[in-house]
Length: 128
Image 1 (tube, rainbow, N blue to C red):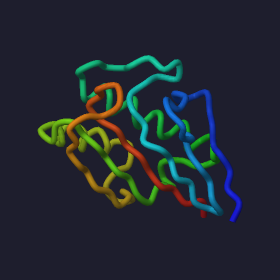
Image 2 (cartoon, rainbow, N blue to C red):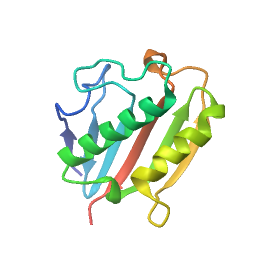
Image 3 (cartoon, helix red, strand yellow):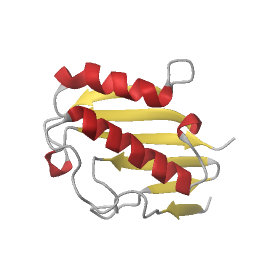
């Protein structure tokens, strides 16, 4: 099955050999987004709330470039540097996804993330 590389200047460019997202059939796989703005500058250093908002804005921008929205997301993976920040991240995440149509997900504490950020989120979305 052929696939399409998704790239937008409304989210940070990849900082390694990967794509912002790949569309295969009606499924879009969005790479982990960290809290960089579209120019590649870190947003909210040390502020998990500001970083979470930026990550979700980046996910939205990449999805929009694929013709999708957060409402099309079926699965998210959240990686956090400190699980003690879970409540803050969860509250903000809920404002973007809500509870009635929230996608499946997992949240995992990791020892380190790129650019020493607090949070990274990837997702899978399906175009109906």
